Amino acid sequence: MAKTIFYAISIIGLVIIVLGQFIWPSTTWLLVVLIPYILVGLYDMHYSTHNVLRNYPVIGHMRYAMEFISPEIQQYFIETNESGRPYNRQQRNLVYSRANKGLDTQPFGTQWDLYGVGYQRASHSLAPKVVTRTESRVTVGGPECKQPYSASRLNISAMSFGALSPNAIHALNAGAKRGGFAHNTGEGGLSPYHLAGGGDIIWQIGTGYFGCRTSDGNFDAEKFKENANRDVVKMIEIKLSQGAKPAHGGVLPAAKVDEEIAIIRGVPMGKDVLSPPAHSAFSTPEGLIGFVAQLREMTDGKPVGFKLCIGRRSEFMGICKAMIKTGIIPDFITVDGAEGGTGAAPLEFSNRLGVPINEGLSFVHNCLVGVGLRDKIKVIASGKIVTGFDMMEKIALGADLCNVARPMMFALGCIQALRCNTNTCPTGIATQDTARSQAVDVEIRQVKVANYHEATVESFLDLVGACGVEDPDHLTPHHIFQRVANETELAFDQIYDYLEDGQLLSSDVPESYLLPWNHAKSESF
Image (tube, rainbow, N blue to C red; front, side, top):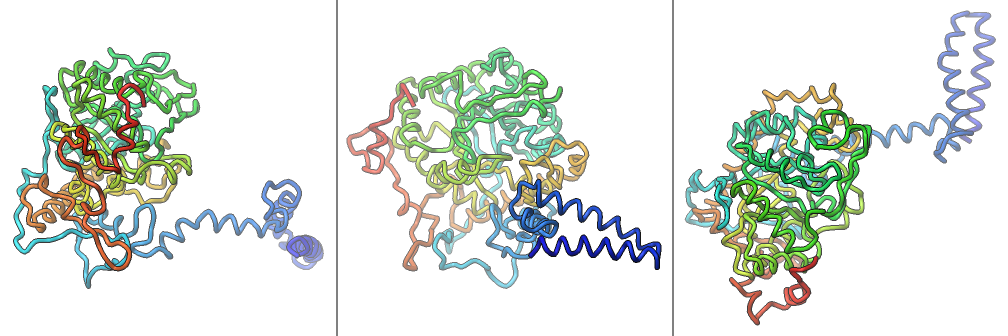
C-alpha cells in the first residue's frame, strides 16, 4: 500500500504540474518538492539498508525521525521525577538548584513510595548534634606516607581530557580550587586543563600509562616523577578497573589523536592508541602492592592507592594477602560501583559486569577489617553519589570519603542528553568539538561546581547531626535502613555481613567469606 501511494503521488503530481503550468506557470516550482520526493523514494525502495524504508518509501523516514528524538520526548514529557535513568529528574534538578544557589527544598511532602522495596532511609535521633565543618575533611596517608593529604569528604571523580572538553576540565579544576576539594584526572593523562585552575590533583595512572609511558606503551619512571612531583599533585591513583566497563580496555582512533592529545598522552600523533585491559607494570597482587611502594618512593611519600570495581572476590582478597605478606600498605582504595558512568562503554559490560557500589564497598571494608588493616587505609566510594544522604549511606557502609563525576557534569550544565559517545554533546561538555565546547563558560561554571560541592557537603553534615552523631566516622551500618519484601525493613548490618577486627586471620572465618578467602592468592589474580 505504501509503495502504491508513493507511485500515485509521484505520477499524479507530475501530471498536475505539467498541466498546471499552462494555467499558472508558477506551478513548475512544485518540482522543487516533488523531484526530491521521487528520488528519495526510489532510493529507499531499491538501495536502502533499512527494511522499513524499502516497504515504506519516504514516509518511513518519519519512524527514524521520531526514534532520533525519543530520548528527548522521554525526558521532557514522559518520565516522572523518580523514573529517569541513569539520573532521575529530582536528582538532576537538585544539582542544578545547588549549583545556582537556588532553593533545594521540597513542598508538600515526599514523592517517594516509602513502602516500595529498595527504599532507603536514615535513623534520626531525638538528640540531634551539630557537626562542625572540620569533620568535612579526612587525612589520607598511611604509615609509609610522608606527605599526607587533607581531603574533602566529597571530590571530583575521574574524568579524562578527551572524554570531556578543555573548558569542562578547566572549569572543574577551577571549581575544585575555589571549593577546596580535589580533582581526579582520569586515565587520559595530566593535561594543561587539569592544571589551569590551580586545584588539587589526584593523578590517575591507567593501563595506558598516559603521561608516563615509554614509546612502546610501558611505564616510564622518569616521566612519572616529572609530573607526579608537581606541588599541585596531591595523590596518585592506580586504576585497575572502573564500574562502567570493568576488565575492558579501549582504543582511541587515530583520527582523534591530534597534536595536543599526542603530547598530553605521550603517544604518536595520527596513530591508534591502545588502552589494554590490564597493566604491564605488574600482573599479580604482590606486583600491584610493589608498584604502590615504587610510586610512593618516587614521589617522596605522597599518598598512593588504587581504584577497582569488585568482580571476583577472591582477587581482592589476594591483594589483602599480598599486603600482609609484604607489609606494604596502600594509602587509599577507591571502590567503584557497577552503576558508575563513562563516556562510552560496551552495553553488556555496563549492564552485566561488576558488583554494585554498596555491596562492593561493604565487602572491601570488611576484608580490610578482617585482616586488621582498616585503620591504616582510607576507602573512597565512587558510583552514582549525588546527595548528602548518598554520602552518609556510603560512609555508614564503610567509606571515609566520596567521589562524584556525573553530578559535577550537571553542575557544568549537562542535561543528560546521552550523546557522550558521539562527540555531539549539546552542552559542550563531553565533546572535543571546538565550537561546541565554547558553550562552557569557565568563569561561570567553576562557581557552580563549587556551589554544588558546598551545599552537598553541608547537607551531609546536617544529616549526620540529625542522626545524633557528631563525627561522620562514627556512622555505622545500623544507621541506614532499606525496605525489603513483605513490608519490612532491615538495617544495613542485617543485610551485609560485618566482620570483627582480624577475623579473616583467625579460624572463625564467616561462611560467606570462607570460599573466596581460601581461593585467594597473593602470587596471582
